[in-house]
Amino acid sequence: MKKLPMRQCLGCREMKPKRELVRVVRSPEGDVSIDIAGKKPGRGAYVCRDENCLKRATKTKALSRAFGSEIPQDVYETLSEQIASAPPQTPPPPAS
Image 1 (cartoon, rainbow, N blue to C red):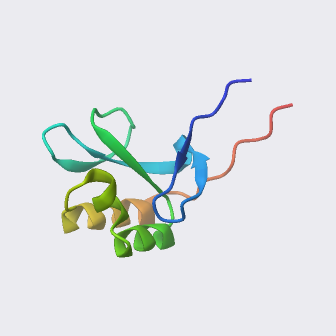
Image 2 (cartoon, rainbow, N blue to C red; image 1 turned 180 degrees about the vertical axis):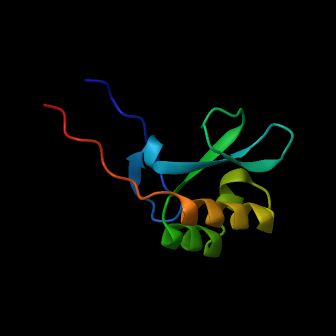
């Protein structure tokens, strides 16, 4: 059985499988954007696909601390839109 990579959500601080989270990345040039595929180079931070987690991460400035720089408001808005339009995550079936 293959080991699933786990990452911590900046909102709820829970460890979850990487595929269940949305990655926000700061490129080497300093640009902050949302990484849909999870392959962009740079420093990554993860947030659950849950409005409450995003609100908590925004309120505590967790993304700003993770990247060491201010996060533009449009990144938060794009992230909120993506989370709102994302289909609900269903857990994978248990391996037998």
